[in-house]
Image (cartoon, rainbow, N blue to C red; front, side, top):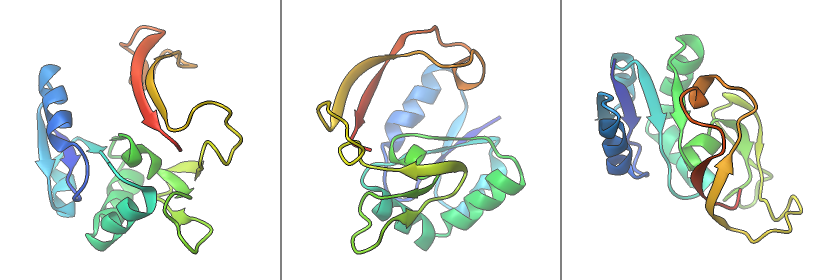
Length: 155
């Protein structure tokens, strides 16, 4: 079983690759959408803003390939940072002159600015916070409750 780390021009690919090596998970960085068919799981990293990253996915053929492999074929996928945001129906970051930018549509909902939603905390939010998942399975199956994760985000 190999995890494919999607290289669409943005993201900290080396860090994701090394993290997977540390947990003895076979991984490879994939640079062509057709390579999704040769992996058992996929990770979509991302650095930048929603609209710019979605444009890169669209222009390089990743969006169509991801929809086919994830939605039609059931390929498990994890998004990191903007990569996670891109899984939503749409996002507002960087959508100049438009109401929003369409996402991949794997998760129902929108990615909106914390400030515009009325957040009174400091934005961008940066720092370590404990996470308490609402269920004990899935991604958090082997992670103890109240484990600290590092966050950097405004959306």
